[in-house]
Picture 1 (cartoon, rainbow, N blue to C red):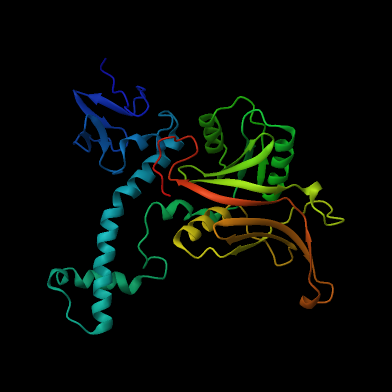
Picture 2 (picture 1 turned 180 degrees about the vertical axis):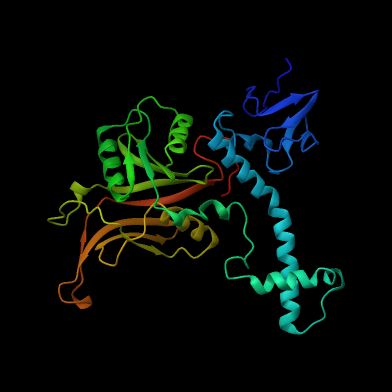
Length: 337
């Protein structure tokens, strides 16, 4: 009917509009064939992703903030190929200079400018990055703001558990799920500047799942939960109230690329301790792909040799089973692992 219908969503959402019979991309404002047809489905050449993952970037057309964020993210994705090519050129020149070899013929015309860039690089800019790594690039500029909630119609045990999970994150807020659907929760996080959404699931009253979704574009990590022990079940005596100090983090045995990615997702849920006086420790220890979460406080009345740990709770085991590149509401987002 003169309106472009998005194949993945089945909606005429107006993201790509018709202008004089030619499709104009709302992201670029160009009608130059940037979006191409592949098997009858529009594929965006800028993002080079499966067309069914388009919903990762689909937000309200009339929301200027979300639209600007989406445009910036897609622009960074479009530059990945050029940045990778430039990185390889500089790597070859750096290698030739270190080994005393002749500069390759194809690089001689751009050798002077590339050597200038190499001389100005530091440890951060010398490494080739991409948009997936850039999701947490600015995370250290401010403290995280985490929204904690449950699945629909939670039991009393899950409600108690999510209250204790909320206490793990010093800068978090908890809301009752009610009748809210996932897109509404994600939009709530984006509009209120939350950095992450944490959702807890259950099976027959026992917590069995934890989902961590980073805002505004992902990633989303899915964990299974086992051996859950809540605070009132912890055997230590006099556990007291939960400290609100920013905790020290112990991330043990996250050495593989997937382990480093998982540790990156977990550690950005917690703000850095503002001083060295915090006596609260949260541990994520990986053993055979099972991540043990423990929450302690410590005292050292007579120095390091007299350190005494007190478990505060809760405690549980986590097992990662999926990482998606989109947010939690993007059913068709690309699966990273």
